[in-house]
Length: 415
Image 1 (spheres, rainbow, N blue to C red):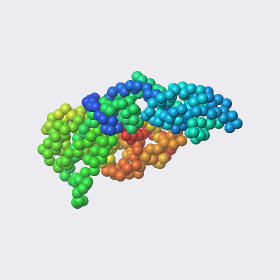
Image 2 (image 1 turned 135 degrees about the horizontal axis):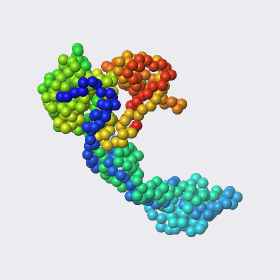
Image 3 (image 1 turned 60 degrees about the horizontal axis):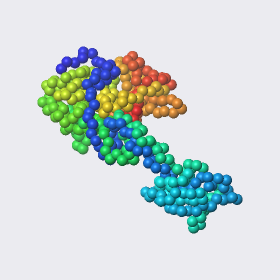
Image 4 (image 1 turned 45 degrees about the vertical axis):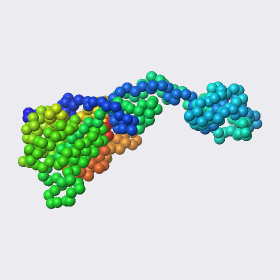
């Protein structure tokens, strides 16, 4: 396994990883499965939407000119000739002096030019009395006002939401082409780990990284495949990674990539013939990060510390999944902002540092409340973290009121 002698910068490591990432394939999915997927086709309106002029509310379809100049002192009286409900087709055209009872969504009768709200009229039998004029187009949804036939409405790379699904259904689209959800195999190793449903024991810690990484993968449009926890045995670790490569599009592991006596992931991957791209990134938290290609699958070896693992997911795995889903870069790159620090901050400054912070926007300014617990094992510090404030190498402190660059931890596709 050929590895870089010096840690890469975050930017160089991101670029190096993305060079080895390719988009996944396309499949057709039903509209009930489309939300949260990435569109893989151009969608144009097959017809005008709405397809016909229709009433925007319950009332009466009238000829606006028949109501000109009306008032309490000089009312207009029209004859109701028909009743049209949604789903029906008008049977008669309006002539001067006539009106039609009409319901919301019902097609407008020929000759009608306005709909008068039912609350603004009086009706006795078939006689309709109006005391205020109607204007041309009042309460009418015009044919094609939402979309014209042939108009491009959605483009490949859009993250499908409930609004997209609603429009697709209005276009009579029961199926839509979407990027397949990448399968992300999650491998965690360590004799000290137990599962969340196991009883606590001395010296043991819960395998929280597997659950957190699975949730992050799902939030990023992927399907997590959590493999059984692997003990610190090189042969077992190699077997787990081989299984992951067979089952998934991308592999993410947690732990075992540093330089300790029980950090066996690198040697296990070497046994399997990992094509290494880099190991170690000049950042804090998350320096011992490994990336390569295993049996043709991209493979990220993330640090074992919980915060380091999650931060590295945001900075490296998230962009990789965005590229696999063929999202535009603007949607997978973490949004960058400049924020005002709300408190004094101190760091060691020995490496470029990403500080967990709560970002908020008010009065035309981003504010960053750097959270007090910044240790890489302090998992609860991620609860309030909506961003990462960046301090370059050598910067050891920041004063309240100072401006600093920050990354927003926006969900993939919602940047």
